[in-house]
Image (tube, rainbow, N blue to C red; front, top):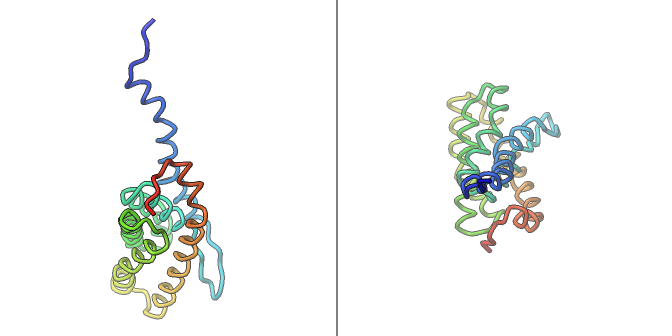
Length: 170
């Protein structure tokens, strides 16, 4: 009887890892984009940025990009604002890059958000034609929600690193 080749064996053993990657990069951000908590004058706390941050930390800049795109597709379609997709891809990319450099979640997320801000403000004002007042409030809500998700992920990162076999940067 013929023994399985090393290619077949590695394909079989890598399938669970591929499933993990797909779930974290595509399915989780999309599903979390469907969940919002409404508060204070019809503002929403979005859940998908948590998946974008997590993907950027676990899989790096490329993972952040994919999660940013998949997490913002629903909102971009519903709101008629396709510029959200590029903004969230940029946020995921930069979170991954900054985390790779310094190994600290909260500063990485805040730096990524600060770098994304010019795109967010410019695209929302000039392309999506949102009011300056709305954008100012949005900037504050997104800052607070990104800080919330970064803090929560930071608290739970040790078991996540073990789950995904991630080297410790810090």
